[in-house]
Amino acid sequence: MMSLPWTTGQTVTKGGLVAWATGKLIPAIAGYAGDRIVGVIPYAITSASDVYTTQGNVLVEVPVDKNTVWECDVDTTEALVATDMGDYMDLSSESGYTNGHVDSGESTEDIFYCVGFVSATKGLFILNIGPGCNTGTDV
Picture 1 (cartoon, rainbow, N blue to C red):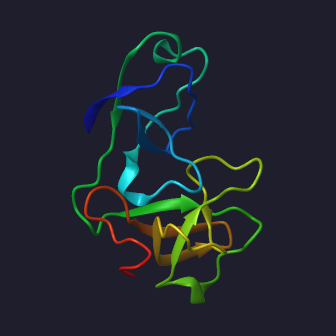
Picture 2 (picture 1 turned 90 degrees about the vertical axis):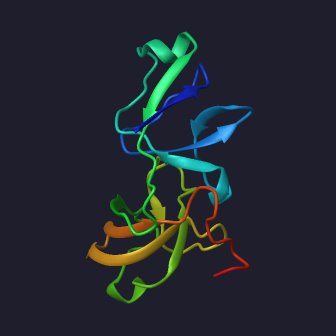
Picture 3 (picture 1 turned 90 degrees about the horizontal axis):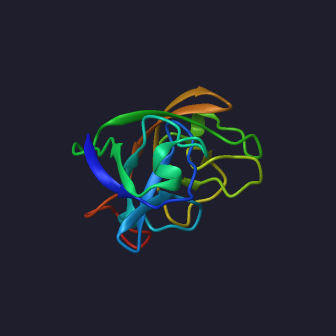
């Protein structure tokens, strides 16, 4: 876990990905490059949280092992299927989904690498994030 600065006025769900923006963290959203995404926040930040209104640091799970497997939710617009294993996928940009959901139908930023099928809405993934991540031209 690393203690890193949080941008005030931002909320994030438990298990969501967070990214750098102007020297502080914000919730990662679809379209963010993998090298800007830092890790997974292990708790929710709501409008009632201290760091929502007052500048402070948050704890972030930063994967240092490239093969750490994370169980992630998949948005229901594109159901995950067993044949998706071995494919790269993006953060969901669908309305109503959080910054921790996988879009199995998109692979522009290649944030998630599918290594396991749990159900149509849940899978096992290796995160392709941080310095040294594979970019779309590398994979």
